[in-house]
Structures are given as structure tokens and as C-alpha cells.
Length: 250
Image (cartoon, rainbow, N blue to C red; front, top):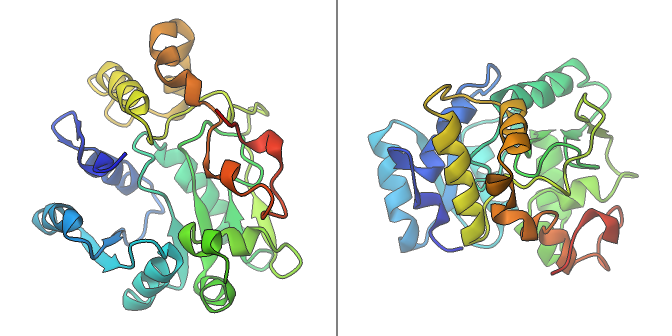
């Protein structure tokens, strides 16, 4: 869905509403919007400059290279990766994953809430030391490892100490609830949720979204055909730690 980061959401571009939610996390640290050098992303850079948000421009398809070089430029000791297609991300989930990593730094090189996932899709948080990211940057060779930044890490548990933070409800909504944006139906869903909850609480959380969807089947169904669809579906024969049950093919 080209241009999705700039789609209107409330009175801001979609990615700016996401930046505001990330800023609300207590452990947010230095926020960097890591975009591409393509002219199509000039507007993203301009918006960041107007709002005093750090921006880094790098490789269009090698996101591992882009994220690594952004970390180098900003002298990061710990790197948190949150994909820009998660505009409804819950700041409390960001804090939970980062806090777990900080509390257990001696035990883990990499911590996420994705392997295996349990939260609704669109609450993705991955945390790693800079040295761990650097190892991936130096050693990852597969196209999928370069494009998606972290697969080399979590798909090699014998080389890295991997931690995972599960949803404390003990439920798994990763294949049934979709809060991310890749298709026009996703945008309709995100806009509907935003328009319902933002006026009451601009920092509405994951629980409030789930509660809304329990009473509004019309909103829940807007992008249901894509629930469980993710990039894994193209690479199940290449990934060591992902099974067909963790993706949906339509």
C-alpha cells in the first residue's frame, strides 16, 4: 500500500499519530523515523523537520542496513525496532517489552513480543543491544534477513540469547485481530477505531480496542479477511523458527 504512512488519521498523517503514541511510552528514548532516500519520502522528512523529530534516510529495501546505520549515527547502545505500519500501537506494550529487556540484559541479546506472537498484530516491539544488531548487519545474507532487519537474530537461537514477552492475558490474538496496515481495508479499520476512541482518550490502549471490537462487529469485520496474513507466508521454507500455523495465505 504505497504512501500509507502519509494517509490522514485525525488531524495528522498516519505515521505522526504513531510517533505520538511511541512518544507516550515512558521508556521511548530517542525516537528516529528511519525512512528511505527515495524522493517519494521527502514529505516524511519535511514533516519530521517541522515537528523536531529526528529522521534518518537509508537504503530502500535493505532495512537492516538502514537501521544499523541509523543506530551508528545516533550512537545507540540499545536499539528498539517498531515498524511504521503499527499506528495503533499501545505505549504500555512498548514499555513492557523494553522494561523486560532492561531488567534481564545479562540474559538476553534480543527480546521481542513476536516469537511467538500473542498480542493483536500491530503491536510489534523488538529490542536488542547495538552489538547484536551489528552482528546481524555483518552476517545476514538472505534477502529476507536484510529486508526485515531482525530475522537473522531470532531465527538463529543457537547464536543469540532470545527472549519473548507474552500477553499476560494468556490469550493469543495474533492471528485473529489485525491492527496493522498493508491493505485499504486495514486503513478503513484503523480509521474507524481511531475515530471511535481518540475523542474519548487520545492514548487509547490495546484493551480498549479489543473491548470496542467486542461490541462493534462491523468494525472488527472491516479487515478480517487479512487477519493472520503477514510476510512469513512467502518464506516458510526459509525460516527455521516459523511454522505455517503462524501465518495465513489468501
